[in-house]
Length: 459
Length: 67
Image (tube, rainbow over all chains, first blue to last red; front, side, top):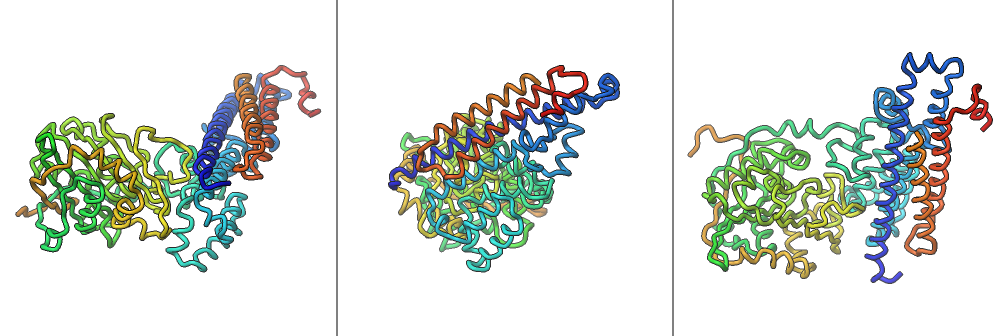
C-alpha cells in the first residue's frame, strides 16, 4: 500500500465501521422489542391463555437465548435490564454487542494505518488482541507490561490514538455491568462519556463538586507577560498568549479594531489549573470534568462575568478560543442561547479539548477543533481519532499526529502552537483566514482571575 | 415479530453485501470478512427464530422442538 492510499483506506475502513454500528443498533432494537414481547407474554392473562404448552413464551425465550442467533439478548424494560446486568452486556455471545465490537476492532485497524508504530509494537498488539478477544487476564498482563516497559508517559502516549476504542471495548466486554451503557454510547457515538468506562462511576458525582456561580477579578500582567502578549488575531498568537498567561486561573480578553473599523473581542481561555482536584478556581480538575459533561459551570459563569466587566456591548462580535478545559468552557458559552442572544459569537476555536458532543446555539458560529492524535484529553468525551462518526460535518477539524508521540507534552498549549506554526501551515492559514475580521490594531488587553465564587471583599 | 424478523433479514443482507464489497480489498484485515459473514448467518437464524415465535405452529410445539 502506498502512503498516498493511507487516508483513503482509513476512511474506507471507518465507513465500514460506521455501517457495522448501524447494523448493531438495529439488532439491539430488535432485542429490546423481543424482550418487551416476552415480558407481555409472561403476564398472568397471557400465561393462562398459553397453557399447557406455553408455546409463545418458549419460542420468544428461545429467540432471546439462542447462541447461534441473537445470543443472550434480553434488553430493556423490567425483564431485560436485570437479566442484562446479571449476564453482562456482552452476555454469552450477544449478537448486537459482537457486531459493535467488530466495528471497534476495525476502527483500531484503521488507526493503525496512520500509526504504523502501533502495528510494530508487540506489547501494544498483545493488549489490543487480548481486549478484542475478551481475555481479561491477558489484557491486564499486557497493560502491566506496557506500563512497566515504557513507563506511564510512553504507555499512555502509545495507546492514545485508539484510547477511546480501547475503553469502549473494555466497557462492553468486561464483567462490570455498570459501565455497559457508557461502552455502548461510546461505541455508537451517541453521547458524551458521562460514566467512567472502567468502574462505571458517573462523572456527574465529580462534576457536582464543582460549585459556584463563577466570578472574575481584573488583574494585571507581570512585565514578562506584557512582553509576551500579542494581539490575538492569528491562531498561533492566541495560543501563545494562552501559554504566556499559564494555568494559574486567569483568562485574557482583548478588543481589536478590525479592518472594517468595527471593534471586536477575543476571549482567550487556558486549561486546567494544576494542583488538587478542587481549588478556589473554576479551572480545577472537577471543573474540567464538569465542562466536559455539562453545559454550564463556574468557569463559564466566570467567563461571562469577565466579558461583562470588560464592557463588551450587546450585539458585539466575539471570538472564543480555549485550550483543553478552556476550550470546553468557551464551547459551553457558545451553546448558551442567552449568551448567543446577547453577543454574536462568530468563532469558537478549541485546541486539545473534548467538545465532540457540544453544539453552538447560533448555527452561524464557525467552529474549529484542533486535536493531536496522541493527546488523551480530547478523548475524555469518548470520541478520539478512531471515531467513525462525522459528528460535525460543518466544523473545521484539525486532527493530526506530530513526530513526538508524547503525552502529556503533546497536550501543552505551547506544543499546539508549535505544531500549527511549524507542521500545519494549511490548517493555520485556513483558521487565520477565518479570523480576518479580527486582524487589526489592539485597543485593549485585560487579564481576569477566574473564581468559583464572587470575592467577599471586592477590591 | 414479523417486522423484527424482516429487520434482521435486512441486517443479514447488509452484512453479506458488506462482506462481498470488501473482497480483495487489501486494506481490510483478514479476520473481518469471516466475522461479518458469521454474523450475517446469525442474523438469519435469529430472523427465523422470531418468525417461528410469530407463527401458530403445531399445538404441541413439535415443530420447534425438532429443530
